[in-house]
Structure formats: C-alpha cells, structure tokens
Length: 302
Image (cartoon, rainbow, N blue to C red; front, side, top):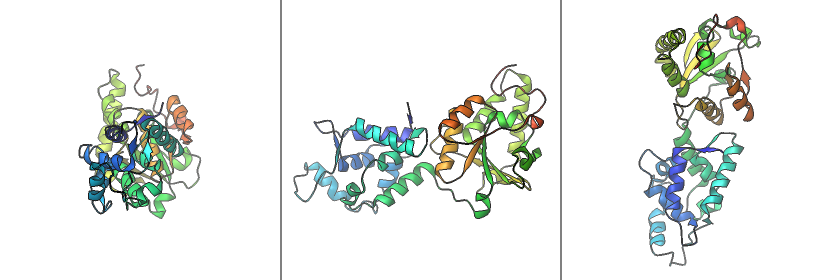
C-alpha cells in the first residue's frame, strides 16, 4: 500500500471535516478547510492558499459557503467522495513514480475548471504547492552532465572514501564526472551506526562522520563540495521524506528525480536494489576492488 506524507494526511483530514450530509466535500469547502484547519508549517496547501493574491475572491467564497450558497452567482464546485479522491491522488503519485502521496497529488487530481471558476490560476497553485512541498532545485548545464548518485549507508561504510574512488573506472564510464547526493536519512543512519555493538563498524561510521563534517559548509551549498577533479558531493535534506527510516533513502532519491535530477542509487544492499528497480531507478554497485577489507554489512553484526 502506498504511503502518504504528513501534509497530505493533514489535508485530507481537513477536507473530511467539511463533508456534507451525503459524505462529500465541495471544491470551495475543501479549499477553505485547507486554509483554516492545518497548523502553520504542517501543510503546503495551507502555505500556498494563505497568500490572498492567489485566491482574490476568497472572502466572497467564504461568505457563500456560510450562507449555503444561497446566492445563485456562487456554485460550491465539484463534489467529491474522499475515498475516491484518495484513489485519484494515489494514481497521480504512481504516475510520478514516487512511493508517497503528497499534497501536490491531491491538487493534481482536481480539474483546472474547478480552480478557474474561483479565479485561482491552476498552474500557479500547483507550482506553489509543489515548491512548498519539495523545494526548488536548478542544475547548471555543467552539473546536468554529471552522473548523479545517491549512495546509501552501505556504499559509504563498506568501501573506500569517495575521495579515493576513480569514478570513471568504478562506473566504467570513461571521462565521467560524478555528483554524490547525501540525503538526510543516510546521514541519520550513519550517526546511529556510531553506537553499533560491532566496534569495527562503529569506528568506521565515526571516521566517515568526521570526514563528512570536514566538508561543511561547502557540501550543503548549491554547488556542493568538490572532492577531486571528477567528483562533487552535496548534502540534500528532503522536505517530504522522513530522515529516520532506511526506506526514505529511496524516497529522497525519488524526490530529487521529481525535481529534475537524473539520479541513480549507489548501494551494496540487495533490498535497496529490489526497491529501486520497482520504480525504474537505475542502481549502481562498486566493484570489490574498492571495498574495504572484510567490511561488515551496514546495520548487521558479523
């Protein structure tokens, strides 16, 4: 079953609170619910709609709702059953090839005419929600020509430092330049490994952590930190993926892909291979020549 982001859950809970006696919610009431109910910082839809310029006749729509749309000039808009709406949103998420439904998918399931009838620009609303939910990211022409890799924890602790990998050789791509994206869930997992009962693994995690610490703040900048002539590293904190579960390594990679970064996953984990393959994500694995001597798999005892 596909998962839902906290913001999308909050948005659906708000919409359900405005159901009519027939168990449906109108376009106007759904929009008003998103504006009124989620707490600040909880919902991208709330953040987008609180800009009065985006919905200029918001006050009139609210008054029409309060009077039961008695004014013939006002129509409540399309009526939706929440369950069917959820199905439509999940279909939109699958089209985007992501593993989690976001608020942008709820809006994508609504028609342009619904928003236009309320003097809301559909493209502006969808763009605002997407930006609040995912953030924005622009690659330079030079950056777009690199091979973009999201390493998981196994790729960081079981092999030599990325600084020492000859990437064109490792990927069998002559002349290749590589950009590594370190996502929040991987950084969190690396910190957890510092307290692992396997002393060798814990020491290696601490050594990797010290190395990464030395790369800041460049690694967190928009250009990233250059490790060598053919390799850059950049820290990416996902807005929608949790920083705590290993499944979110892939979700963060999918978020980068949604933002236009042609990412691939770098891993030594068979389960990650299986998960990434189901969503069409290419997976890379380093040869054993780059592996550290008898390294123990991340998260496992010897």
